[in-house]
Amino acid sequence: MISHPKAQELTEAVGRWIDEIRPGLDPRNQFLARVAANALAAVTRELQLGEEAKAAAVQRLEPILGHGGTYEGLTWELCEKLRSGDFTADTPGLMPALRANVLDQLAIDQPGYRHETSLP
Amino acid sequence: MTLDGPIDVPAALSRLAVRLAGKGARATGAQRLTGGASMETWAFVVEGPPNSKGGGREELILRRRSAPFDPESSRSTSLAAEAALITAARARGAPAPPLVHLCDEADGLGEAHVTRRVAGETLGRRINSDARFDGVRGLLARQCGEVLARIHSADPPKAANLKFADAAVELDRYEEVYRASGAERPVLELAFRYLRDRRPAPRAPVLLHGDFRNGNLIIDPEKGLAAVLDWELSHIGDPAEDLGWICVNSWRFGHPERPVGGFGDYADLLAGYEAAGGDPIPLERLRFWQALGSLKWGVMCLTMYMSWASGAAASVERPMIGRRVSETEIDLVNILEAGL
Image (cartoon, rainbow over all chains, first blue to last red):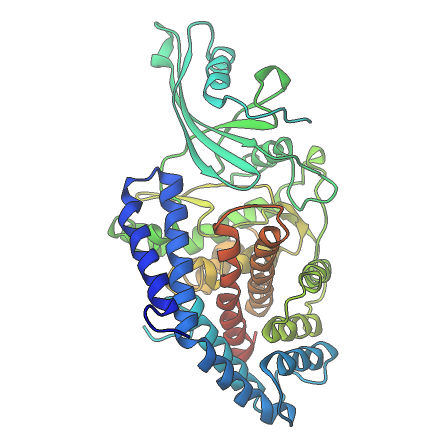
């Protein structure tokens, strides 16, 4: 991909512009503009972190499923095994892998979300 | 009911003011507070005719449906049912904004009702963090338990025609929605199976609020819990459902260390429930419903994305809510690892 500008620089620029004009909007549009800026921030983070997160998820799922594959293929197979009951919360290695994958996704979607095991 | 184009709500409120307070009365300060996808909330003031007793000034809230409603397929009740629920709950001593008027055709507002405006704060983040609530925050969990026991003791109003839903019904309903979405989310798959295997034994069903959480409560900085809002998801079911829903981490607004709404502890909620006459609920049963609550909220987030993706609803908000599924996934992982 080209670098002058990078995709995440464009999303950053538009996000900043939305923040600039936000105070002048009516309350409903102020709210929606904040949602729009949040959406662009999530896209920016996905551009920065997404590929690495996907590769890490594949690395975590391969030993549990016992073979290699794509992110989509492994995720589909894991869903099937969970649905049928072949895999449960007691399946060795499963919960730590799910936790790590979800935390990577959360770092893209909502890095500020506080939950029971997040650091204060 | 048909909806023929947009309604001029402030004009209709002026006519309603005359009906409520007599000739010469007027509606002022009409302001739309929230605009959900299908429901609008308006604040307005009715000023009685000159010389009316007490100055005749009343702060009111209008709730009206702004999109077609199918009572068969919807999880929501009608606004007439909501009015009956508010009245039934108040008769048991549960605080809800007093009903002033159930609108009919003559009002020209469509399906709508009017209640008194109760003073206080509804924004969860402020309730949990603002210093002016420091004095009452510690009381809220117990008050929530007491109020839930009173709601659960009420006879379901016949006119409300409420549906029954226990854990099995809810799991079936949300799994069907999840499957139809085509999304593949391992944590949600695991949670469906995990919760099916741990369904609590049936117990006598009661009247439930159905959306009892921080955000639907009016909190007074002096007295604490002043009113319970938004009764449209009311149904008949397991009493632990209402207690679990307010403990879902998505409604803790940045305070995961305080499980009840981000303001209190499990023990106070359960003690308040028992003290007000509720049949004791084991924490494990509450935690089951808390987990099912996170799962339901995750599926609801997917549903909001789907309604945008299908073209049924255009908004920037709905697709973005789809990115909240991962918050429910980490909450589910936390609950499953800690155990119910």
